[in-house]
Length: 108
Image 1 (cartoon, one colour):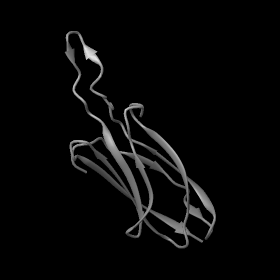
Image 2 (cartoon, helix red, strand yellow):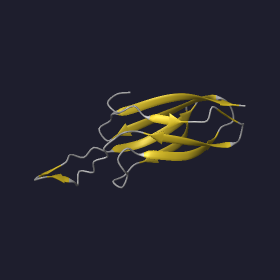
Image 3 (cartoon, one colour):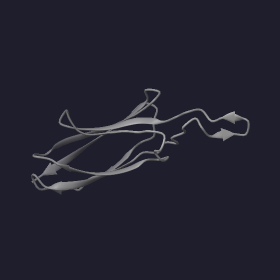
């Protein structure tokens, strides 16, 4: 991780092969659009740009963030995996800072 808050991910302990399961992610980030003002001056833009999820090196989920994304974005999505392995979550902001979290999942 370099520069962003520690993300959180919730996965089931194990899933059945081919069964869809829920993934929940949260990262603390202010998501400033650059449009808000603090008195006479604009608050500088500070936005996450993307979230990617890879399973054993292959991208299985991707999201791009825009101005309408809330601060501290929380995402829920579903995956289906053929075997046990490692999921790697990578958040990147517009300044090039990243947060990375790897979690192993067991497929029975």
